[in-house]
Image (cartoon, rainbow, N blue to C red; front, side, top):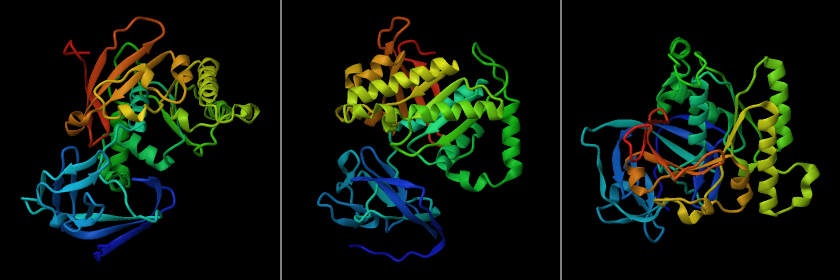
Length: 364
């Protein structure tokens, strides 16, 4: 195993964060911030990473290799499989940066770095942000990510703060107050806008234990305690919810579980007179595909059958390189559609989806 002794200037101990590895999600034990090192640029067909010269990657035989020892044409492991190294060199401007070493609790100590995924939470965060900016109050239920991580993403989106600098800039109270005032005074003119920004309230439930009753009780108590009316509930995401104790006979039947949860969310929408938005996973066979169909939603067709509207997030390798997405309509209960698709730019600085264009028209 390759080893390199770095000089650290700070260490963050944590038990709340996880990182994706080649064998699933793993808890992060600690993060070490180093002194400044020379930046190196590593690029494959789909990945682009800025790192130190001694950042370790894995070759085609799963052997560890320092980035500085890679050559053009070498093959390394990526989330999309083996890919050829297209670029690997020290930054031409001799840039230096603090690096961050992550220690995980997983025994193989491997994790994916800087591979931006088509992640449900990014889209759900943008939906919540845009609804609140339009003057609507939103409750964001997270069953996957930690509360702080959700707040950081929403803060970057709403206040236009660089996500990479958010931890530091968010400590500047003068800056944050200025950003909040700018948000309050922003023009919210539109068909469904109320004229002033709404609020987003985030609540974290444990993965696999959040039920319809839990969300029902939380919304009821929060609306009464805060004297607020929620217009939207965003849930990240339905597959990680659990069945109520009274319905344990469902067991491992995925269709019945999906039906129970989807109908439960529909009940909440009717009870509180609000829009409910959630996400579900696509079949792994269409990850990175150019097109998605309603039949590509696995496990439980009941989720799609119960929903009023279903949209697919599409991102192939070319779109990933260009930081673009497509959103395709798959189902519209009250109206007709022809599988229309909207194209978006993904702003990696603020994590926002921008410049939406209805394909075939040049505008939206």
